[in-house]
Length: 478
Image 1 (cartoon, one colour):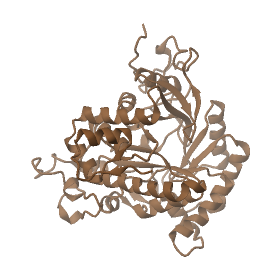
Image 2: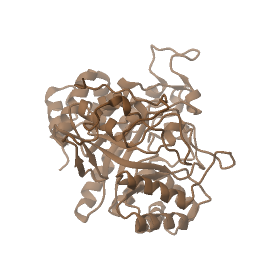
Image 3: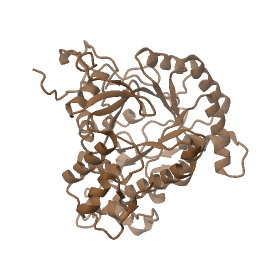
Image 4: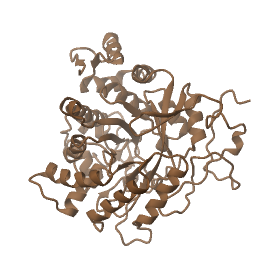
């Protein structure tokens, strides 16, 4: 049963907040926005941590071993925040052959991985049979591997590329998704969420589907019995109200999925993951930061806040510098936004910590600000690393970060069922006696080359001493 809202209560009312922590009340969007601005950050984190413990207990926090396979970087969209996409005629444009993709899955299985996260650019040269053959072969050769693939923007372009039958967008998406589901697709990732507010989305994601289309894809997945995740990328031109509006749309659609489909074996949003925009090598990164442009008046609201509305209907014409200034989200803004998502999204089971963008130690702090999951021990990543983020962790390191935060690390699967609880001396981190030998190896990339950062899921030494080394804060290690 959905918890009641109390719109007349002050956002800082102790009784309201205690009920929110207990799951007996839910915040309104207005209260969530007020809480972000008025609540002491440490108190906000504490409230989120308490809410997390109500849902997930006080002992175990999780991670998954998967491989993020970006099968092509050729894309029709013109997102100004992306450093990954290529038009197709560049020297580094690529589409991986099936044999290469299958070898990547084989490497994942060899180190105990359980899932592939497969996403790519929206490449018009690939037909539906290319995807069906790939999925069918993966499931035939690796039936134990969960296939978590193809974000909503990819499905919308599948509709555009394949021209399926159907009277409306939903029917066309369903036609395509049913075939991919039958071939082996098991869940749909929340990529391409960015920010749902129309003015922000049109400015930063030209050629990418709008919010309603994104949400429609997820509804189809839920009706077909597949779970999904939801994401949000913030810390650019958006206002804080845009973040709350984004979360509210996810919460509303989750209510619908639970109410309409749960009795019929339908799917739902299993997780929400948010992260700050990574500016390096992107057009959006060239937009001036607020306060550093000619005529910027820091006594006035940030242009994004001036335009943002909780209903998502703000207009860019409301401020002359909207879209021409961005506001960086550092560690504090990230943790506050994550904490707010835990408190506001009362119907979402998992909140993921984004160490990939924020770094290992801020990611570790996320476990104290409402997150229950550290995400992936990542064998491969191409999109975020293209924008300059090269943080990497192997399995011993991610387990150590979880343990040093005060929890027992546990490997999970896509459904958040526990596979291995690391509470004994043979645990990946506890088995290491000399952490100076546990250097992260170089990060795999789509084409099999090596990047300058790096990680692998295994512990061990590396002779070259690359700068990708992660310095862990180890407790009781003398």
